[in-house]
Length: 273
Image (cartoon, rainbow, N blue to C red; front, side):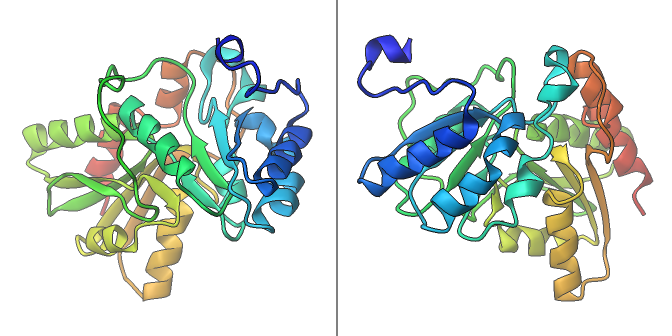
């Protein structure tokens, strides 16, 4: 559809992810603002190009990573588990994971306004939440700024991406059933991370991170590094994709296996000490 509407603005390079990134870097060097669209899993093939042909030169390339997180029937080869952990270590890189359709629209708009890159947008396979996005305006999402979605003082839940919806549901259920009041935050950006939110969450003494990505190297690692760097004596528990390959199943089954559904989040909330 995009190619038919804008035939002179879309280039199909096939399954040549490394070339796609270098090609995008070349366009950015010439003053264009390329959006480079790659499956999260296969962005790994372009790791060197992202570093040397984009990040090292601070070129404004927007990298759109489709099928980030668990992909269900696409199979284990297509899980977008590793992008956050892989790219968080690259200097001058921005990583955003929108929680719904409206946030995705605004993430793309924000990416368009960036002067340096790479600007990575990760989003999942499948349907959205049904949030209205076509008629709403555009909003700049300042890098390094998240959003508080729910108030609570007993513990804090830091989410990134669409996991926010299940975290909110779990927090509501825990307050109804057990009287535990949890604040819920949408970090929005993994890099740069919102230090003010992390500091506020740490003040509760109990922090849970929820991410549809590898626990090792992602938001959980970011929070643990922050706590260690600040010398904070707090409990931090991470929910995400564990250190093993997740087998083929339906998305809902895979998320339940990893504890990424509301039942899994509730269980961690109940047991966090």
